[in-house]
Every structure is written in C-alpha cells, then in structure tokens.
Amino acid sequence: MTKRIPPQGTENFDGFQRQRLEQAMQEFRRDAEDEAFFLVRAAELFEKALAREGVKEEDAENFTYLSGELYRRAGMAEKAANWLKKALEKTERITT
Image 1: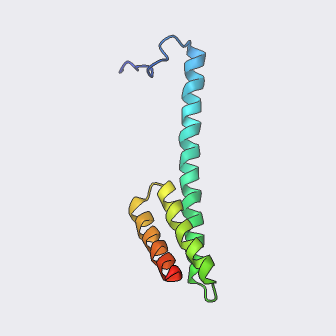
Image 2: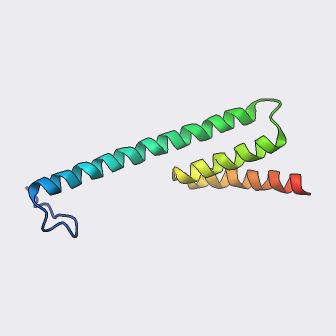
C-alpha cells in the first residue's frame, strides 16, 4: 500500500480534520463538474434561441456573446473563441 502524503499545510491536522478537508475537496470537485454542465447547457439554450426566427439583432448579439462567455467559463476555449468571434462580428456590423 502506498503511503499517502497529506496536502501541504495539513501535516498537523488530526484524522478528523483531514477527513473533513478531503470531503470538502470532493464536494468542491462535484460542484465544479455540476457548474460546467449547467454552463454548457445554458450556452446551448442561447444557441437554440439564436436559431429561431425573429430574434432582435440586439438580443442576437447578446446571446452570441453569452454563449461564448459560458463556454469560456466551462473550459471549452475553442468553442468559446468561435462564439466570441461571432459576437465581435455582430457588434462591428451594428456599429458601422
């Protein structure tokens, strides 16, 4: 069996404190996974809204930007960059 090395700064924790810390870290990881799932789901719903006819140009600009931002926060850099580029193009069309 491999000896477990405690996280730095926790050498003086007793067994209960270390167990609570490990539980908190597991919860944090689950929360982060859940958050990423919901960020992607929200981006997909903005994409669906964009596919509908009759979306106002201002709304389309915002939905496009939000899709990119949500993908960025979910760690999907390439998809985020594509959506943010589209948002920039929409903004340039509106302002010129």
